[in-house]
Each structure stands twice: as C-alpha cells, then as structure tokens.
Image (cartoon, rainbow, N blue to C red):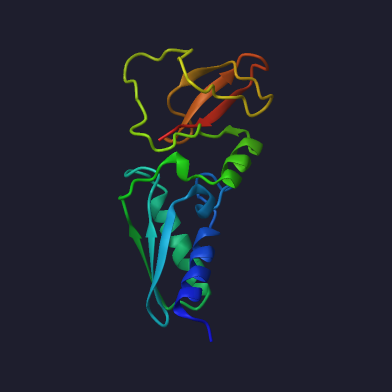
Length: 175
C-alpha cells in the first residue's frame, strides 16, 4: 500500500515533470515553480504553483498541464493554487535547468543568493552595464556581451549580443 506521503512525493514529481509552456526545454521542477502537492482525499490533490512573476501569462497553461498529468495518474479532482509567497526567484532554477538553458542558447540567470531585491534600473538603456558577474554568451562563452533590449520573447528574458561572435541571444533575467 502506498502511503499518503509517498503518493504526494510521486505526484510532486509528476507535476514537476510538466514542460514549461514558454521554455519547453525546462520542466516546472527545473524552473522551480511547483512548490508542493497535498492530498485532500484518496483521489483529490492540491498543487501549489508559484509563477515567475504575478502577471505571468503561462500560469493558466501550467495549471491545465499539471491537472491533465495528475488526472491521467488517477486523481479525480486536481486544484492548482497560485501561491505568491515566498516569491519565486531565479535562484529557484535548478543546476540542471541552468545547464539546459545554456545548451538551448539562453544565458541562464546569474545566481543571486536571495540577499535582497535585484536592482532594477528604469532609466535609459546602457549597452554596457557594470556587473559583478558578466552575462556569458551561451554560444561561445565570452563574457563581453551587451544589452540590446530589456525585454525579449518573454518578459523574463532580455536580448543581448556577444561582442566576440556577434550572435544575439536571450538572457534569463535575475529576479
């Protein structure tokens, strides 16, 4: 017989295996957005999901995909709750997720270590901003890159260009 705790762990793994709808190279577990799964009965589960930011348009798709996967595993009723505290941080991305981003051609976020808010400049774009750790090109590894736009294909990514190989690339912004 499977215990409730073992089933919750299994369901958490299943929910975490869902690909991110905006970055399908990552699973929700690698992205760090699936926080917990609780059983509310023998075939009823509640999942805590923390979006990358409060206005993330992918939350609905993530929720539907989680519900589909858990229902296919025998859960009759699945509720996905959006949980905003503690807030998601790019530090929640697993090392495997960072490796996959790099291989996919997206510079992973620099590790922030939760030491307070990430500074955000709202003034004019500076193409070469001072940084403690440079954003490395995912194509050639060069640290000499420039910011082209604070926003890219999604709000959580910026568009940069490598000054060595001249290739543009997305950078998953630190939050």
